[in-house]
Amino acid sequence: MQILNIHDAETHLSELISRAIAGEEIVIGRAGDPMVTLVPFQAKAEKRKGGQWRGRVFVAEDFDELPPELVSAFRGEQP
Image (cartoon, rainbow, N blue to C red; front, side):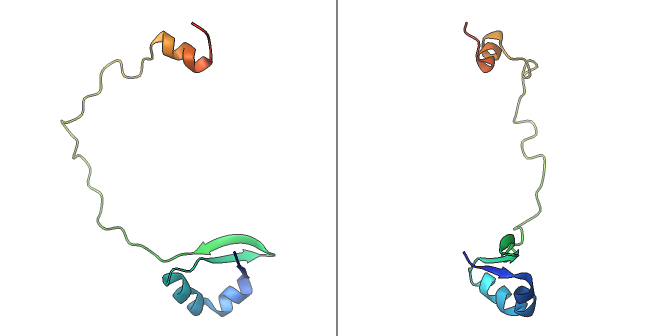
């Protein structure tokens, strides 16, 4: 992985953007340490809509209660 320093990235930003859009991974760093990766922007296909599962899902009243055997197993206790 090649790390470009910030000054070089500023100087060649247009070229780096074109390379990133073409699929190349561009890593920009400071003092040889990677800081950021330049990647192409990807717009979301559509805004999320809520409520599609309303009336289709049931949550039992005891959903948050674990059986004692399961609690013991999580704690590593032997039955």
